[in-house]
Length: 338
Ligand code: ATP
Ligand code: SF4
Ligand code: MG
Image (cartoon, rainbow, N blue to C red; front, top):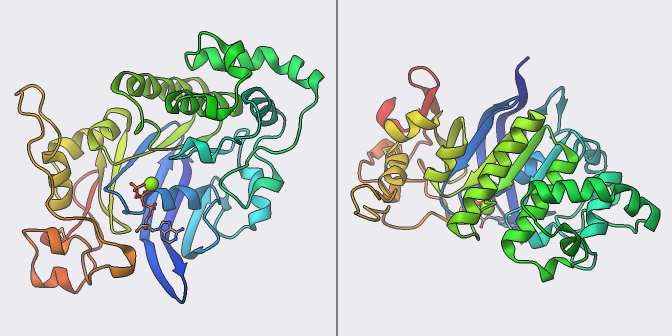
């Protein structure tokens, strides 16, 4: 089959004191081999939660309540946390986290972190935490043996002075440099699935373009698939074959990148597309969606977007819209289309 990953009706809750709330509600999506799938939405829509669930790194107060996460033959929602490491790393799943400081160990030099990755990948002892994927010390001879490979990977991500970089601690690097180290790790691991969570948000436009190019090169070289997460629909559309729009934990719309920009159907997606700056007309930002996305502990009844939607009807205030297929490879969740 052509399918690498499929999420089936996934529900994820966070617990806070004696309360719980859904951050992901009934999400289904598919990622094919060698495909880039973009996930876009405003802050709090559930994008990172979805990404963390796929790689088995949800925080302790989160739980997959329902649904499947099928990676090749295995349902990752069913396996033990301690068995997860087999699916990470080498030819498995790798994630570039939203904040690269959480995935680089601050007390270990870049060189040793990269050697650890070559040797073990993220390992069994590091499965329960977002940080410290890379633990344990590596002996000198191994470092020397692997040095060529390390330098190669750092050159691939544009470092002209790999030797100097290898000798640094993560806090001695800029945000962009740290992100490139994460991509260098991906080069070393050759993952089948790379989840890149806002990998370019903290970067200037030129570095941003370079990082995107590197991700696409990695995809070409190892036939990897990528889940690219961002709040920026222009960026997501540039890099993705298919785009998923999330809001309030649900999928609002799914379409090819081209279709999503040309023919958005959901009023929320229309709002995102309308807020793309139009440089050609020199108009800058045309509009943005008024109001703010909801807190999951105070989600409105019905469609999560209804308090901000100027087309909301009474049904929108009581029923969650379901994702419906509209034409070829275009689906939308919105009561206007049912
Ligand atoms: P952003 O664009 O800001 O990164 P996101 O789409 O990645 O947002 P998530 O980080 O998945 O959103 O968060 C989804 C919702 O879950 C938010 O309302 C957030 O406040 C909540 N949430 C996230 N992590 C936790 C946690 N550890 N405990 C409780 N609630 C959480
Ligand atoms: Fe707006 Fe209703 Fe569609 Fe939600 S379901 S986007 S509130 S029209
Ligand atoms: Mg996030």
